[in-house]
Image (cartoon, rainbow, N blue to C red; front, side):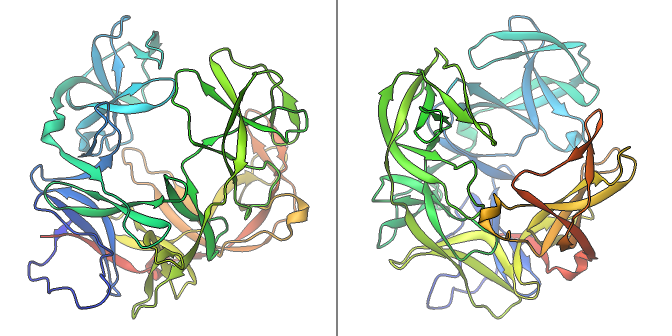
Length: 461
């Protein structure tokens, strides 16, 4: 990553090109600088610790901190789960990351608790782990897919930059909230819905859609009171704080249908209890550890628009807006030449490009012995009543990294015509695969990665 030039001119009059974001004296904004002149946020850099950092919310002290990335997790070397060690997946990258995060787990959530450096490499035959109820489980045989290290020094939270979430800013129902730090850093975080009294997340429900809604924080109401699965209810641990809102995802809805949001309704008996398994409504046994609540009144969520800003370059910024003045920047960019959204992507050779996204390519088999592979794109369609699915223009295929390396390759292909043949999957036995509420499409020509806009990265001075 190269440093940005120090002779940055003052921002021109008019709208803020950074949408309110700015660096502090210690936490610096990092950027993707595209060859067409477009700039997009990347993340944050801790100039004192000389490393990139990421905002981890809601630590065990209730605060948020910008902490370095980690690949290690905590396991234990004894049956009482008191002696800690670091477990890191052996993907060829374990030598490049020096940190492990320890989480405090409960039946309700998990919170970052301690950040550790890793010590010297050790040899373990067995390990233990601690479950959310505090019990120590094991022993489990160590895997050759993991490396194990002694626990190093703890990075104290006082060594990190504390980050807070500011009040909503905006003239209407939806206001933008910014992460901010004592040194002056400011970076867009989320949207707040004043009418519902909660943060929400702007989203659209179909590829390329221009309208959507701001989805409020909610817990999934995954159960039902009746054998028709029409009377939804929430099951939640008796130890957990009750949510303000619930959300229900219709199992046989169309892909572009938004979920349904409700207030939390009345406490009810656990039995009768049903859930929809994707094909039918089936009964189940309530957990004695849970309370059960019916959903209440359906919410009127705030509508938003996905707006593509006109720009001189090939790439254009994307914002979520509303008629009252919301202006929330998406991390998506729009490639006018390809006619689709793209995201900055680091490629195996270390270069950066804004690579198109859309579908994903899966490998199946075209014969009943599962010996002839075929790549296809599975597109969610919903039941037949939904009509033709929204088919993406492009699909990505991820290539396993060579042994001893950790950089997955990326290939991009156009999406071609519907696939009508029989395909198979092999999960121990070769069986016919029939997608449920989805359709298969053939893969078209590969798109050279050089056709996507290149970028470099920089750090604010």
